[in-house]
Image (cartoon, rainbow, N blue to C red; front, side, top):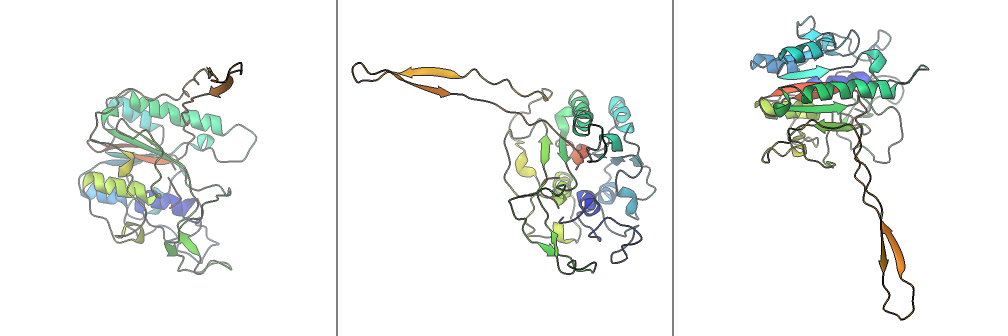
Length: 306
């Protein structure tokens, strides 16, 4: 979304937001929670699939949806590792880091490295568990942080409500790009250039479990945001080894002489270097549904702001 955290969070599990800004009592130009909207957790539950929101207080927006408020499936983030060790992860999980590991700017202490390690440790824990052969993990962010992006986001929806000067009829979907890391034994090892959004996480789960989308713009036929299916290759054997967080070592530069056919001319020298690079997962929020049997683990924030 071309907006703040809350509308983007809502799109990761509801594919819709009734607000353009983070809610507060002073922002009376938009609805106040709880919101009476449909959501993926409710649809999963109605179809007999389990879900869980692993988040500490004020770390996620699930309780702001009327049908989810007070749900026993909303639990502290620390319970994720407990459930993983007990072999009792649900079909779809949303996992949010505690505030000290959220990588949110501000303060004087390091924020990126501790947050990155928090996420990496949980990815490794999943990869070393019985769930790994059937799991897809999506790691993403809730907004772009205000940094410049040379790519102009496409206009799919304008804000129909009111607000301060400039809000009426302003661009609502889509917003500036955010990273999304996809980790799974079935994932393609490449950069995917398809167009995705936070709502793509919902679309992926709907397709995976064969569920019917509800009536919101981001799930309408013809919406440009994909369902992340193209990130995977389910026809090839899965790579079941645990993923590494260490960049591949650079190869030693190769030097070679090119002999000149001209008599008594020195050979020219060329240098080529091949380097493999591995992107270290930074983090924030993301969803991870089980790519085989429908099991998911989620960790932080999504590709191309919703």
